[in-house]
Each structure stands twice: as structure tokens, then as C-alpha cells.
Length: 205
Picture 1 (cartoon, rainbow, N blue to C red):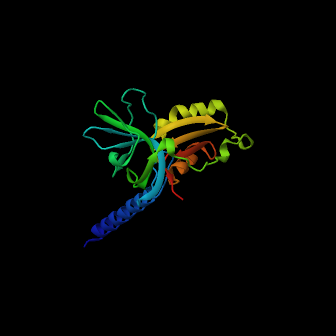
Picture 2 (spheres, helix red, strand yellow):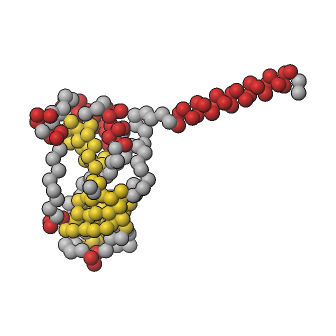
């Protein structure tokens, strides 16, 4: 190998190492707006909402807004193992069956495998007190700033936002599920104690 060829080979090798190093660093950097990385193992959860099934399609667990039509219209995560014959309180019209329930199951990040259910009218959960709604613990963000954030958070969030409500100096944002990564995104994007993520599917303790 000539001296010129040897020098060229060394330069190319160093360039390849530099690209590898840059790529490795980029893969571990988390920027505001990045999609959160949730655990892949199923999580035992419970949620309250409307179960709706269109004839010929899979049942869905609607955890957000429900259009007050007849039959109602809504969408949500797919339910695995749902059996209308095992529950009461459902209605059917125009090829749609629906009802409101508390549902327990295993959440895999996309679908909910049902383990138990009860009519929502009969569900009496233990009250969950949120310290952030206490007026003595009010946030420092102005109402105007919270409204400005609310206008964009539905588009900026890395997961679907079900509802958002400014209250007590904070913006409360409901999502389907959060193992902590969505709240981390909110803190990185808007600062701590500004946007508070509240999951509709809560881990079972």
C-alpha cells in the first residue's frame, strides 16, 4: 500500500468513527416533543367510560368526549375479551351497542385486555384527592398563559389528548395512559408544575 493510499484509509476510518459517535449521541438525546417511551410489559389498570361496538367491528373503550347522538359516537382503545353477554346496562340501535362501565384490564400501550367490569352506575371507587386542585396549592402560571398553552397542547403532545382544563393555576391534561413519560415531556416542554398529565386509565394498586 502506498503512503497516499494509507493516509486516505486512515482518514476514511476516522470519518466513519465520527459518524458513529454522532449517531450514538443523537439516539440518546431527548428533546421536548419527542414521543415518550413507555414500558412494553402490560400494566394492570382501571378506567371509566363508554364501551361502544359497531356491528362487525371490535369494541372500543371511549375515555374522552362522546357525541350525544343516537346512537352515540366516540372512539377509544380496542377492548380484548369484551363480552356483552357478561354485562348489563347496554343499549343497541342502528347496529351499535353501547353502555357505560368501569373496566379493569391489562394495558399494553394500544389495547386493553379486559379482566373485570361493572356498570358505571354501580361503581363506587375510593375518592382520589388531587393536591393540585387545593386553592392553598395554586400554580403560578397566569390564566392567559394557560389558555395559550391549551390552544397548542392538543397538537404538540406526543400522545392523544382527551381533554384539557385550566384550573387553579395549572393546565390539567387527560390522556389515555401515562407511566410517567408524558408528564416528563410536559415538564421539559412547558416547565415543571404548568401542565399536569392525568391518565384516564389508572394503574391498579
